[in-house]
Length: 329
Image (cartoon, rainbow, N blue to C red; front, side):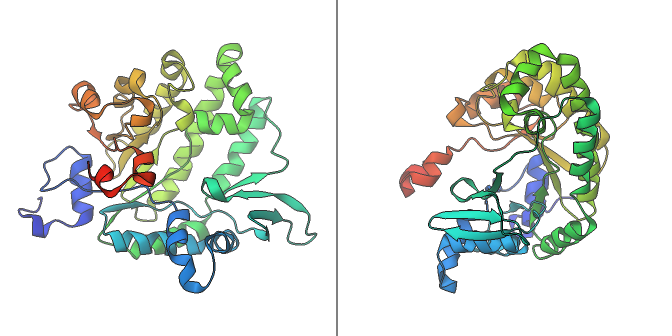
């Protein structure tokens, strides 16, 4: 039974109801809070600048949860995303750069993209896969990255915000992972030159992400965040999305159908040509309805609002650089 008055609704209940397209007393909020933002806000309290805060999070990734949860509690949003923490790495600061080095030899391994969210950019990327056996081995490694230790850390973080709605992500089911396996340019070429190979690899990717998602469910999260920015119509054709991506998303969502877990799908950029297909994936929610990709919330509501809940529609550049009044409008 749903609460009968606004005072009785918890943030988690608001998000769960909204994602199921049920009436709510207000619109719940779940901003994308990446850890670099709270680091910029709070690092100075410890006598360090934000780059040093980023460096410490790379060496001790558990700090990421501390930063994100603190900002979530301060702004009092209803939901948040807590991702599986990466492996700790040794980092040396060189000016405004964060350089990752081997713990034993000190040899440079790559850098941290501090200005772009904190991802590790290796100097020597893994070679592209060439065979299905190559893909199988790499995907097995990806499945193994979700260790019991990492799941326990995520569970502990989740229990710190018991009244809030928490989502986490198994990883890219389609193009994001495929481009990581084959390289961004070659992955696009493969859609035309090696369609059977693409389809076979994506089927394996679905199984890998299902394995990872099953582990996520042990942590007490409320939703799975799926989707691939590289599957946007800004990058691939709607025909390729229908042939390769849609079946993969449907297979993933079908696996969790009837379970007490919500799924929302994220494909940013221009999603206008694929909105109906996104609504057919089996996900409960479609987002982010990116205005920077030319997507109109009103148009999306008219076309798919009767099938799925809608989330987003906010210009992130305005959020980052606009005035208070511009953001409010």
